[in-house]
Image (tube, rainbow over the protein chains, first blue to last red):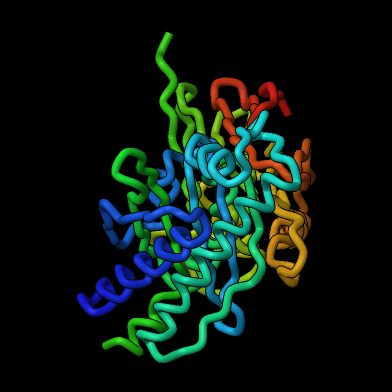
Length: 187
Length: 163
């Protein structure tokens, strides 16, 4: 991945976090950012392991055959729900419609802000679909985005970002497909 | 007694063995399909982790990504180790639709297509299926124990079950 693309991804994450900041009405900062290419075989381990329970928000990038996936540990997702609804979920395995909707909105908003920055930097249109919220084994919910990665190659960029307020930080991981089209535009 | 040796079969991969201590495992299978084949006489077993229904080109790291290529490749590797196609006990697991969210134009139906193509490829090889656990909305971990050929399937929040 080129330095230019990495810089653009960093900017896109910053934009996503500032979107989240506006949504929760608090100043949220990025404390750590890392982007790396990961082999398909190892991607689920970036999300805690193929059998780890995670909460994933999946968006399709319209007209580009692209995908965006944001994964959180259940505790992080529970914190987000508590922060936005004022009440903790009873069970992460059986989220209510409202709880799913809140997570979907967070994913939607962060996805839109992320894609807007990416689109601006790459000079291309990137519009997200409505979100799908999934709670299951990391391996299982990554199957769909990773099946598209395998159609083109055998590795994909993963972004890890730690963000929050000085006293409370959370980590989210982002998987975006495809990057080749974006790389071509930024080279 | 020898300790079990677990071989993780990643997306698009296949693995075969005739060591009784081997456990072939697909972890967290969602829309993908795990095809388990075991010859009870020779003790040879194999597992393919199918990702997509049909295609032409595979890669060295994902020889088993397409159903139409994975099944013949699995049979070939089993035969090389001394397994006999006519004796194979075949079990098929996976092909879940992990999300039913609207507006994805069939993206999440890929599991249904994977199962359909795996069954078609098995039929083409004139193989019958001993057991199946496919579809639904939950991911699964699949383990095949080559000491016995036993296949165990587990989903989040559920007890492991023998297939």
